[in-house]
Amino acid sequence: MREGGRQTRAGLKTPIKVEILDMIEEGDRVAVRWQLTATYNDGKPYERSIMAIYRFENGRIAEDWGVASPTLWPPSSSEQAHTPKLDVVSRGPSRDPA
Image (cartoon, rainbow, N blue to C red; front, top):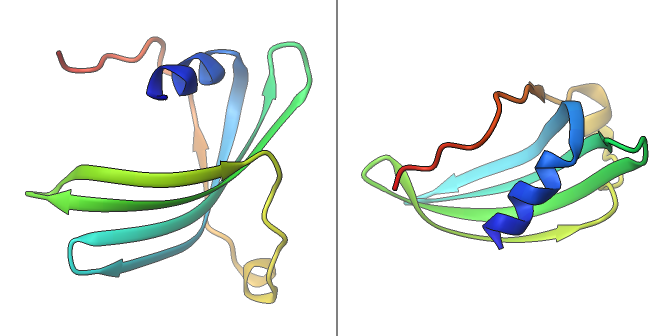
């Protein structure tokens, strides 16, 4: 599954916009509702809404679960007032530790 995500990201042009809409922490878990927008290299739009839960161990992600949908979350009234945004810039090929 992660390899498929890498292939998709490789086909996207920068900038890639990531918006974190909600983040809730309890114990060793963090739930995040976020969305990603970008453009494929051929000019077609790319949109995903993601709900993910991360379990941390020793300050690192030990497990994660998530669901993605090929559409954007509808905006809530609080999101219209203030939505944190993060632009992701490509740094080249991923370098996963072996």
